[in-house]
View 1 (cartoon, rainbow, N blue to C red):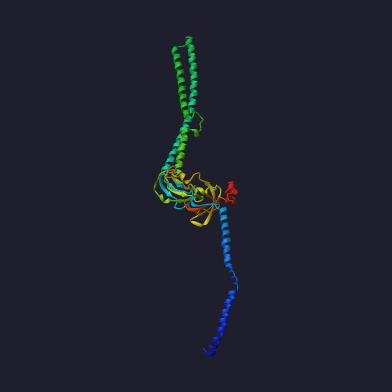
View 2 (cartoon, one colour):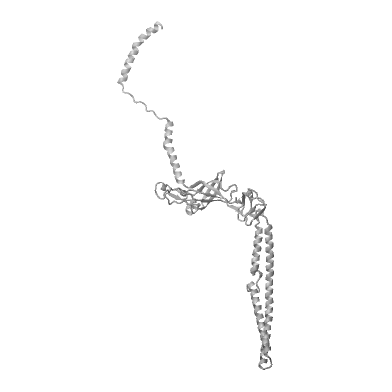
Length: 398
């Protein structure tokens, strides 16, 4: 440091000390001024507004909407596709001679499925035809016999009249002593023989007429043996036609591999199945507590697990008169000491609306069902005024 700098520092020191000494005194004598209030940043004020006003308002609006529209839709995933299923059973016994169907083949009503050996059935038809022809011949013979007996009776009655007249003359001759008693007795025997012949002919005629139901002009369609023979022929022809089994419904054949050529089939024993694919339905099983406002005719939407991007539309066709447990083989017995209440499920049948492609649906597929009950709650019900819920006009009408 230079000499000039050193000389300047001591000279300035008293002035600084004076200033330093007088400043605290001045500050001590003066009144303190209030500190300025710090304003919150704008961002915090906006956040508070959102937290305390916007979010509660949205929550209230959402809760109100959920309350008003909650319960309108009854949904359940306990629902499965159903379809008509027919067990193909032959009505006649025999060996399989031909098979016309394959596994998974789509069938129309009347399509041929398989054929049972027809040999014995054709023989039965021929025998029935022969028996019917024989009965027709017997019928003609009976009617001819009746006509012949009528002619014989007419002749026998004329003979009786002649013999009675002869017997009367011989009585007169015997009375006038011009005839003998032997001639009279011979004439009397002849009259008795004529009467006996008439009785025999009448008995024969009555016996024949009994076979013709007492009507000599009976048509063959009313002849009992002919009716029996005709029924036997119809039965034999029907059995022959049943040897070719045809599809009773339209659908898809399944389990066809259970039938083989040459296998002997018993009448009434199921062979394979046909599952209809044109009119499936859905059997939904919602809880009993969800059925308060479900009624037949309400709209429903169906989604299938196998096709999650597709929606089918339908309607409630029927509600089961009992819970599923009531139709089980062993219904539950609740009159016991260890009873535990379990919410029951009631089957609801959903039928698909017309004009939809339902051929891809398979029986037993899992589905999700949503039934639109059109039920709406009221604000009055929220606060305990009036009814708790208000049904729509559609629901009331149903």
